[in-house]
Image (cartoon, rainbow, N blue to C red; front, side, top):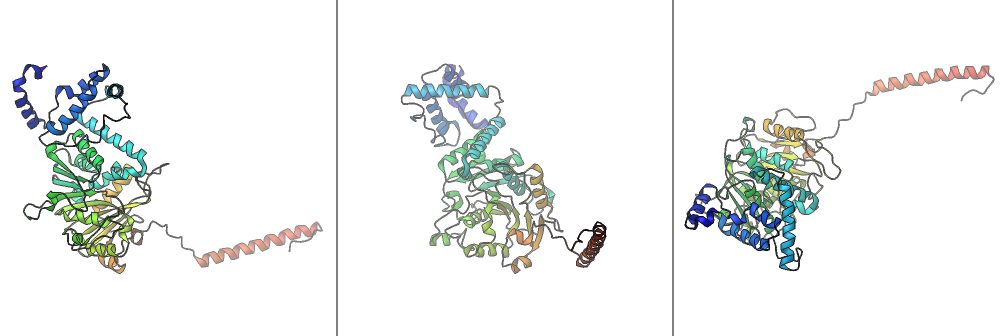
Length: 466
């Protein structure tokens, strides 16, 4: 083995590998070695795995990935009561996995897609818990398509490069990876994400690595978005302050939070006001919007309540509209998410938008119905994106319409989609004069038929009809 034969060159070799491949995995920690130990029931498999996890966390990359495997407990009693029992169980599990993997490609894209598939399948079986870490891919497709188009002239097509993209409630990172896939591996300078849940935070970091995103190309922070405890985002020097070309998010719906006086003075909220304690939806929105570049686009998934609820939310919504920051509102069908059956909407925001109107897209009736969950087809998604892209001057019946600010103002800045684009079928107009004439004719025919019938009854010496 090269490592054994060249011990003096190992440090230099690993330094070069970190520069070129961005990571190093020791030979004993490679999958082939681990799988061989499992097949041969090697007694040191468990210890080797633990050592491998520590090495990957602290030494594999130029950046440290501290705690990446912190949620994996190889000492759990669920694997066995003794070391030998746990080691034997791991041998069995890994051998079965190796047998399955032998039939598939092991290139980076395939492994990443397999990991993403498993996350999706786990989400599908997790019900409401899934909302904490996963955005269904078809909905991610809509958000990623919107933020990668030219923000001022969407009809000109996709932007050539994004310096940065941010998801401040990134879950497993699937939405960020969807944006990267649309832009291509070299189309984004750096990916940024934030996640409060430690398990989900580690899922996101693994997801990035398994999709071949280099450690220098992404940064996922473990922390609370609403309290803004990421030092990078708290920078006060305007020259160093971080802003993003694209912001995407699927934050928890109507999340209860603790607004206070200090947050009221926070630059993210100061000009708009604080979202109510019962629903942090607008707090999440304002956080992302604050860090959006002037020429950028933001797409966020929120419950319909943000469109029409009163109180503090009405004030925030009114201010955003008066300042010309709400560009498009897209109503989606019900039962698309694992975490909720309610219909949700996508809000598209821009700091500098050209049209002085709001585009409403009511896609609530355009979906494929499923037994447990509805889904969007390629055609459904393409229609939404194309409508956003073209922003047609003329309304699309029962689907989309550009609404002038004067009309929105007349509705007290209520953005309930059905006020502007109703999906109700128009009632057929009834011509009363023609209907009356038809009924008179029918009455005449009834009288004639009755008289004729009574004539037959008279011949038969039977009582006539009254």
